[in-house]
Image (cartoon, rainbow, N blue to C red; front, side):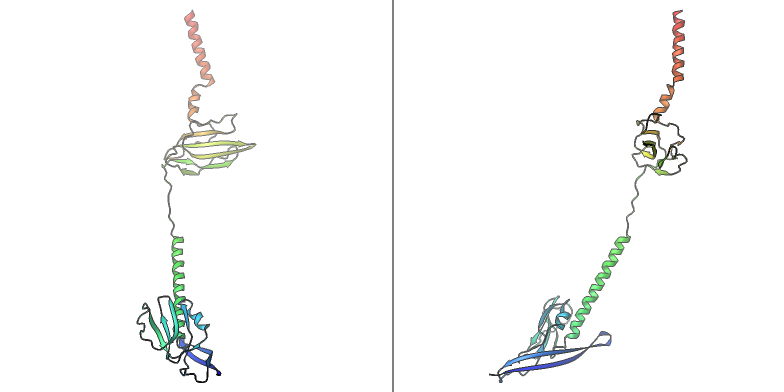
Length: 273
């Protein structure tokens, strides 16, 4: 028994889109045992199975194989919407009539390179689909990024000075005004002392009426607390104490107490006389 080695070099020119011609050269080697081989077809096919996204790469890296003598065609078959195969075939009875049909022959020919253009189109279609998807994703991302939801915090329309500064009288002359939230019905001016640094904070307050009023002996206190209005800030920013309790305390000033005491003494003296 003898072994015959057959080497075949085939070149096929495939014209693709935009008039670009690709030359595919294939070297194939077939071994046939015995001198009485009956395989006279000399048909070679690249036998492979691939996903549509990898078919081009698989096709270009697969060597051709000598088909059986009964085979007359190289069949490119679509098994499902994603999977393709190429194999030797004696006949190609079911030809695909549309892009969605499965279990049919996409192409049936007598050359192992005749499928190259179709395989290349699969690659082009995949790349176009990926590009389209990328552009769509980019567009959606851009739309989402530029679509901002603007929310406005609710207010009661009342106004107070907005103050934050350091210094003994830094708050004077301030003109910044803010709107208060629905639960803030007072304006306040607060003093805080740390070492030699005096910090003033002014703004809206829910209730500052019972806070400690500033005096010569307090380091952290409220210089002002007043009922907020929608017309303008009620803070005076003059340096004088402006607290709800300050007016009450004013009625009991030392001079008034002395006058009351003198009046009561006069009455008592007149009664005893």
